[in-house]
Image (cartoon, rainbow, N blue to C red; front, side, top):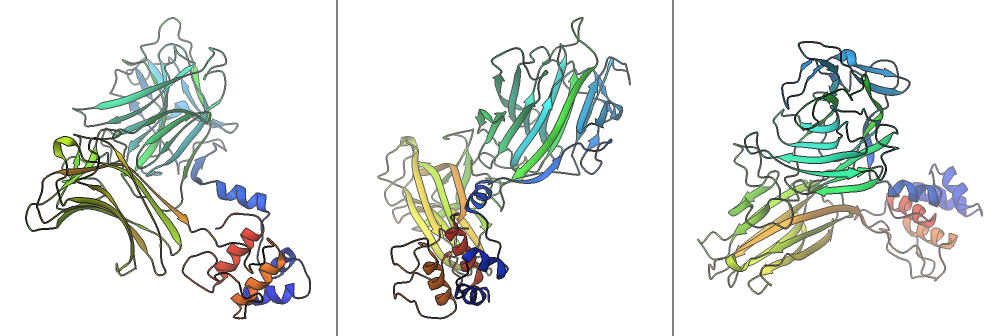
Length: 496
């Protein structure tokens, strides 16, 4: 066991870092480990445009005239090249395929797709009248909308870009667009390289330019796999058409494109923004439901919709609700924050209660423990979004955490409803115990490590005041993960 090897080593007066190395443990410096722990995003895909040809494992070039928006270009793979560490889309006034202009469009459809994440591109954009470069996302279902536009620029406004979210159907298409303008005309997005990014979360999309927040969009956030598109359109209803001021050729130069995600599965559609695709017969996409639980647009805190629940008016103390499960491990802390409201025009009656819960379940779906709080009763202030918070730590043998919103209609079978919106669910490791393991008031020092190793090896605490051997609070002890967590904290890093 690692503990025994370390204890024997330390007994000869050797430093804890040297002993850790001898026992086969890599102990990082506190600064290096803390820096690594701060990086919540982990890169899952990128194209750095090395080599001399477009990476066929990532991209498919589009061929043909684009039939929408009254665009005037013919898309040709010949307009896309790779050289000097950059992907280049070249737009020209060379006629092709019955169109006056030739340009390029490439996408990752069928090759790379993502649900949520951070999407970044470092690029220099084409300019002059009629140019329309874009960096955007579409669903792999090939239905439209939804659409997330991480960056669009109109060639005659080289110091302004637009970010957008589109939703609805072809017939009911709706969108929200936010502009971002550089303070000067020069340098602009055509003269310099800039980084365009969005962070797509289950409840919102945050947009950035060079790390600066541009906008946050909450309405009808996409909840399905999407792929990446980069293109330059020429002409169209929005950018206008090339004229005497237009300069050809124009180059869209891409230094890199990267996608990162937060490790682990997320609770989906936490903004309560999407009932599901047309014809899916869903009440709230990704959420399981029972009783009278529905997607509803009559009341919402952000975006266009919320979750609504009310009683079934049958037997006393009947329930309605939504739930969704995610995998967790013992010792992880699940925190749920949301907002609830009962409006005066549909106020909850006597005996009615709305609650939110976190149920920790085993691999056989047995409930091991529950963290729960009351969100609304008939005495709650009406017409106000009230904050609701609950937190729980996964016990031993936990496999999943089930997030549950429940409406209980009491014995009086009273009317009234509860709405929930803007939920946030985070899953973190439980905090470690105090590093002053032997309780002598001196820490961090080697005597704490020696005491910890003695107890971990089955020995007695030398001071009779030692802490819990389940140092990392994962419900599993004694094990080497407790020792590794102890060493991290002893080195000045955070609990992991």
